[in-house]
Length: 236
Image (cartoon, rainbow, N blue to C red; front, top):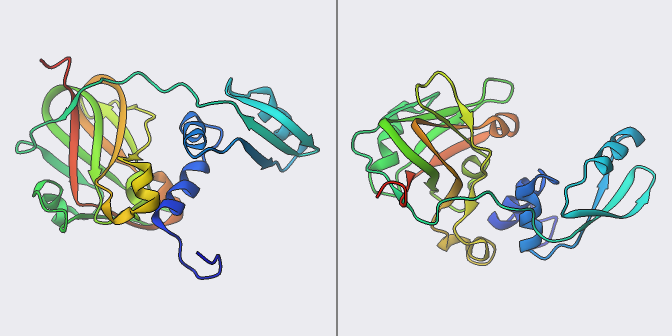
C-alpha cells in the first residue's frame, strides 16, 4: 500500500506497535517469526547506546555501530515462557464484571455474539482504563482470549493482564496478546479469530486487563467476546 494513502493494514499496525517494545523477548520472537535479521536503533546519547549494548539479550549481538546508531543482529527467538499445553475456557455464567467505563456494554463480553462488544474508553493523560473479571473462586489461570470486532484492534493487543487472589494485590503476567494466526492477520485479516495472551499457570480469582499504552495513544477499546483460560492439565 502506498505510504501516503493514509491506510495502515491491521497486520502492519500490529507489527508496528509490538516491535516498538524491542528488545523485549516478545518483540524478539516476533522479529524471528517474520524473518528480520537486523535492527537499526537510533539512541539519543552515547550513554543510552552504551547501556543498551551492555545489557544485550542472549539472542542479540552488535553487528555494527556508528556513534549513537547501533545495528543489532537477531540470532534466533528469545526463549518463551513455559505455558500449559492444554488450556480451556472457564464457564462464564457466574462472572462478575467491572470496568472503568462502558459498564452498560459489559454483558456483550459473554453473549456469544461477536457483532456486539464491550466498549471502554481511554483518555490521554488520565488513568489507564481497566476491566476486571471476578471468577467467583480460585482457578488455575493460564491465559486470556479476546475476540475483537475487527482485526484492527490495538485496544485488545495493547492490553496488559494482571492476576489476583483477593483483588487487593495484583501480579502482572507480563504476557502480550498475539493473534491466533500471524499469517492470517497479515494476509487475510478479516478471517482472524482472536487475540490471546498465555502465561505460566497461576491460581487467581480476579483477572484484570489494563491499558496504559492505549491511555497514551488514545482511541477505543472494544472486545466482542472474552474468555479466561484455565490450565486444562492441572484442572483434571
